[in-house]
Length: 295
Image (cartoon, rainbow, N blue to C red; front, side):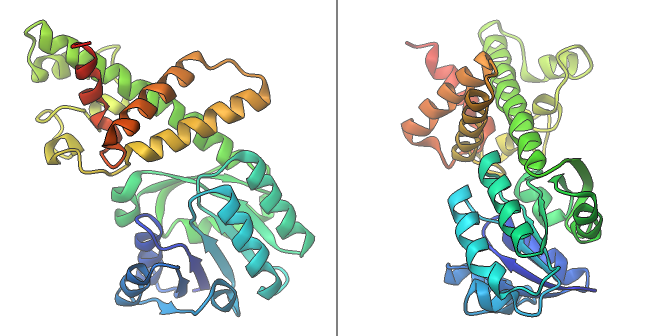
């Protein structure tokens, strides 16, 4: 078992660190938020007074932070305190350029590094069923995979530095677009007098089938585990979808790619967020779709 430093103990990072403890790793954790530190202690992690203190003696360092500037700030802080050859994994969802800069920082100091953003939401973090999309050299990925397997069920090596972030951005653009499409279909079905269950029974076994429908159906009933059955309490909040769709648009602009549906999805989720619904699960976008009919 490894000595693991975990920095960033929020809604995703906290449960992920707890699963590493359950797997038998010695976890030393740090977060700026006192409540997150307290929860990590309850979950069996040791606490450090700073990120730099957390990484001393660590075999593996994992970060789970809000944005690229936070990742670069923390990596600049902790890498000088790490032993040469230590593996550092960033599980945050950030822009591709910041991910590449983080890899460069690690390489300059002789560290192995992987960008490994996740898919699966808070339920996946708690259940250790996340998908990890990984970027980095083969040697770094080989070292990271056994650790990531304690927190997820599918670990994919997508390519070199930043490739994990690229895969995450593309995947979540599909997710945002498809959830709006499913929401529109159910809103139309309601107007046409078609029951939610009837549409689900047809579309879930026909050409309209997709994850947004069969796993995360945006109306109560057909999929009991969907947030729609729990007042749209977030597994993945709408403001996070705005973040990811914005990252996708920034990447598309930088790469010279045309993503008209991705751009429109971003605008729709931004409007939902601006109306005060950023903390609602992203499947709650059906509420916004319904509201458009009255305009």
